[in-house]
Structures are given as structure tokens and as C-alpha cells.
Length: 187
Image (tube, rainbow, N blue to C red):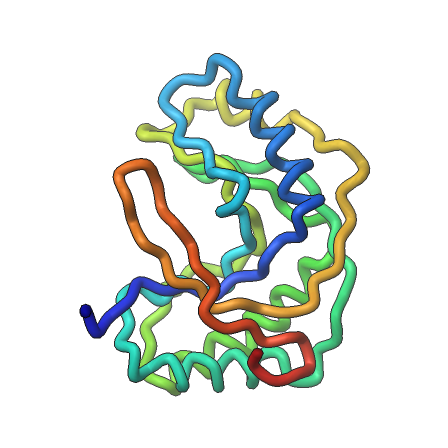
């Protein structure tokens, strides 16, 4: 049995929001070349990608997660604009950005103090819905970014979750390992 796992911390999405996004992905994916669309069960808002970690470090990760959510209550969120990075299509938030950023601003130093390395990119809460094998050109980016989600997309964010990510030929499989409710202790 390996002593390491591939892990990340994320905000889980309610099934109703995954269903809205699944319908949206189905609409977007028709005829689009070269994209790997994210399976509905894998949709989430990433807080921190940890990479390969030792089982022994899971306690430190849990403590960092508890530190990050201390004093932060559950808050409303709403899906927002469609955006792109050079080879990624994502859905942002119209509501809940500041709160997600507040959690991240506490999570990052707690993880760094525990010895984890994180990238230096500015944190931008979003849900990745597709990746491209190549960079999108301007017309592709514009075509995606002008799309609008249905208005029935509000939800409550009430915790953060540590996931294990297992890579398979058909795509990754994510398993929750620990969940920390906002303002609470690990479950």
C-alpha cells in the first residue's frame, strides 16, 4: 500500500448545482473539438492543490483547514460568468467570491507553515468545466465567455473538504477524506 496520496482541498457543490452545470456542459460540449469536459461528480471549487502528500501529513492538513474556516460562517454563493484561461473553460461566482478568498487567505499560510508548497498564482474561485489540449484562440474564448447560465444557481457554501484524487485512463476519481464545516471542527 503506498504511503502517499494525491490530494486537494475544495468546496463541494450541491447536487442541484452540479445538475445545472451538467446541463450547461451538455449544451456547450456539442460539436466542440479537443476538449475534455469535467464529469458532473467531479465539479468543485478548488481551494488548494497539494499534489502527492504523505498519509502522516493528513493531520496537519486537517488543522490547516480548521484554521482557515475559524470564525467564518456559511455563506450564500451564486454561479456567475463563464471565463477562460488559455486552455481552460470555467464558471465563476457572482456571489461568494470575497468569502472564498477570505478562506484561502487563511488556508494558504496555514498550509505553508505546515510545510506544503503552493503555487504563487492569485487565487480566483472558479469551477473548471473543461480543459483543451491546445490554447484557445480569440474566437473560441469569446464564444464561451458570452454564454450565460440559467438564473437558478444560488447555493450555500458551508464547508471545505480534503479530497484524494486517483488518476485513471477514463478520468480522475475524487474521494472525500475529511470535511470541515465553516466555523467548526473536522468531520
